[in-house]
Amino acid sequence: MEKASGDLEFERAALYRDRLAALSAIQSQQGINPRTVEEADVFAIHQEGGFSCVEVFFFRTGQNWGNRAYFPRADKTMPPEEVLGSFLAQFYDDKPPPKLILLSHIIEDEALLAEALCVKSGHKVEVSTPKRSEKKELVAHALTNAREALGRKLADTATQNRLLQGLATTLGLPKVPRRIEVYDNSHIQGTNAVGAMIVAGSDGFLKNQYRKFNIKSEGLTPGDDYAMMREVLERRFKRLLSEAPVGGIPAIFTKDDDTAPQWPELVIIDGGQGQLNAVRETFAELKLADISLIAVAKGPDRDAGRETLFMPDRKPLKLEPRDPVLYFIQRMRDEAHRFVIGSHRKLRKKDIRESGLQEIPGIGPSRKRALLHHFGTLKEIERASMADLGKVPGVSAESARKIFEFFHPNAG
Image (tube, rainbow, N blue to C red):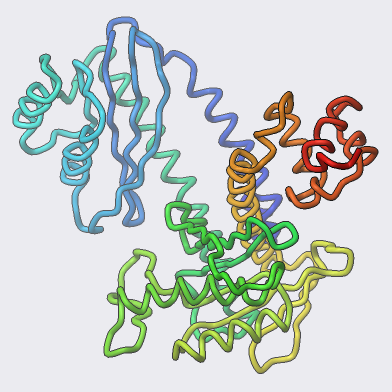
């Protein structure tokens, strides 16, 4: 894995990393079903490189019900006991505590936390840091997992930072971007139009900051991708301007810390020179500056690896197919496409429920989905001949006749 990463073959390195993680997960399942502990949550914290990882194991009815790693943001000078105490104070806000909570470190106000959880749950809750027996083994196992999970997190972050540095160098950006926003839109012949934004930074994809935009403009020409992109960006950045202006100029960062800023330093859009020009006009109207722009045009026959990059006031750029920077850009663009397609499908499903198809006797949900998937829109279904309707998988000749007569009651 390290050799592949050193050779900048990040895809192969990621494959080896995942294999190592899978092997580690298989090994970690051995001997962790406790003999003497019926119900408990086990918390272990490990700190390294200014980061913290809290690994939590859940045991119920004497069985391991799984585990999860958390990476709480905290001041780098905070000791593990303090980070763990703050984490526990919030962990049970929305979930019931078990009868026993085992910790890797002694926290301040341990007795007070136990008393508060007793009141919350209505039963006795014991909070302890075991020194012997099987309980100590459970904590030690959780601590090992915390150490390994943080190691993987740090490795991923280092790789991501190298990619961000490479992106800035290759594209000639003024600085290494800490926040990248990627935009895409989707529609079928102008219907159910939806735009989407995904966010990436040094921690990878920040999925809790993804956003979708249902296209609302009434005067929009169906299928006008430029107008759809303008609407999405206007809505996004007008809101940012209202929420975080400094002297009327967008504040890219409010302080120099490790958190992802709310303002992007780089915006990537799916499209070519036309899309780039539309975005530049939008930014000019909003008086936005200090945000780098890139449009990623698909290659001939939509081949990955043959994309063209368009940037303001520069010649179009093509990168080598195996360039890790190109692979990084492809990953971000594909993630935006995946997200927007998922949002679009949800909108289409809602449209199916609300469309006239639900009024046709004998046409159930599966046939409705098949019809819309085949024709794209309700209007195209209305226009279809009986023979064309019969070509849809799952639609019999009799069903085709019913659908056709529903839309053409006077056809006979």
